[in-house]
Image (cartoon, rainbow, N blue to C red; front, side, top):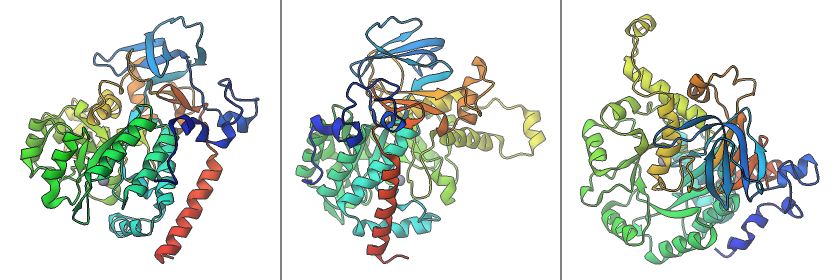
Length: 469
Ligand SMILES: [Zn+2]
């Protein structure tokens, strides 16, 4: 841990040496140069003015032209013509202002493998690379993954640290997440090679997050391969206030300890009896629309889940892995809607589907809800994030509507436009906990070229240590 311990005070400063001297930077940059503009992380009182607002609140409130007022990291008000004379104004015209996307299950440590795994066979073979990882590799991989998330409009993620072999490795995850400034659950391996994670380590990780993330981070627990230790570790996690509790699908045979803080992942082959169980315990589901089709196991069973009574609020998007993919919320939403239609129509011939004129059970607004408020609920944070409501933490994104792929766009079609046409390059601004982390389409406070060079050389060193070509 010692190499990665940082104080809360230093988190913002450590975000990049380039930030030095930019403490009072305006939103358009510090000193007016492009390089400096990319370095200035902005915080304070903000007014996002004149945007098309999708609050994603329970009533589905939308405002054609409105403002979002942010103060002390909190959404102070959402409405038309808000007066906030002390706030820095961000022009939100020609953008959709909405809650940041919430991600629910991501093995962020394998972010260094990009380009190395062709399919699931290779992916699982490469998992043995964990033995060759240094704590610094964990730090770099998680930092790289988290910055890609922010770039894509993901303001909250769930880091599965299943490659961490000890507390120092996990500490590297925590530090990377804290430095990047993303909101995160980070889940500790509940067992390792048949040995239970010691209570002291869980307490230490839980307390570090509490002391160093200004409320943005909380500890969860992974239960893959827990075997006979499963129930013991669940009870310990509950006692320590650790959630969510999660693994890869194998927990439904422990009905004695299940509860609403469990997250079921993937589920392409989920059976009706399992869906009934998930429903009865209030278990949440993290769907993997990018990786499951890519590795050939199928599409997320969204039509089945919806028609068997699982609410969209109890499901979230999972990036899962970035060894072969990038975090792309728009693409994930698109796959979900399209998968649901394929499953609902039964893959009939095109004119049979047209003639049947089905009323689709999972639509664009459902996908947007699942990607924001749903994810927040999956992670146990429904009260603090996932919608633009006064009093919630200020995790907000602005999506450009005047980019080449986004016009014309009528108010009535805005959900379609976002889901079927949206792309990461349309993410103009990303605010996490009231801090501007991306502005004008550029990540702030990070030298992207330097970071990608570090990642490339870390992968090269890793391959060399592992004896890979
Ligand atoms: Zn997974």
